[in-house]
Image (cartoon, rainbow, N blue to C red; front, side):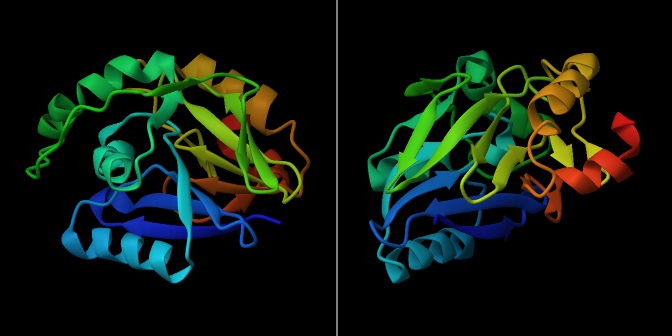
Length: 214
C-alpha cells in the first residue's frame, strides 16, 4: 500500500505530493512548489525522517507554481524531470511565466528528462501510478492514478466543485471537460481526488455536485 503526504506551499497555495512505499522507501515527488527556505527544509526533513529514496520527479503540468522547485529536486536527488512532452514549451518559459505573475524569486527554465504518455506506469516499490493524459488546463496535463489504493492526483484539472482554468497558454475548455468526463469521472466513485490546490474530493462527489460538468 502506497502512502501519500501532502504539502501546501505559499506560492498560490500549491499542493505538492510525496507518494511513497513504506516498505522499500522508494518515493516520487509530484509538482514541487517550494519557493522559500523553510519550504525546502520541510521537504528535505520529511524525506530524511521517513528514510526515503526519491526515484521519480513528476509534474502533472509545467505551470510555474507546480515546477518552481523542479531543478532543486532534480539536482538534489539525481532524478530527471518527468512530464508530458506537450508541456515542453511551458517548461522552457518558466522565467517568463514567473515574470507574468509578478514572482520575484529566481525561476529557472525546466527541461523534461523523460516524456510521460498515456498508459505509462510509474513503479514505486510494490505500488504503481498509471499516467492518464488529461489535456485542457495545459496541453500536457497528466493525472496519476493508483488503482490499488484508490486515489488519483490530478494537478489543476479537477477541483472540489470546480475545474481548472483554461485561459492560460495552451488552455482549451472543451478539451478539459472531455478529459475530465472520459478519464477521471469514469474511475470508481470511491476514488479520492487529490488536486493541485485546495482540499481532496472524490470522483463520486464531483459526479453529483460539480456544476461545471453536469
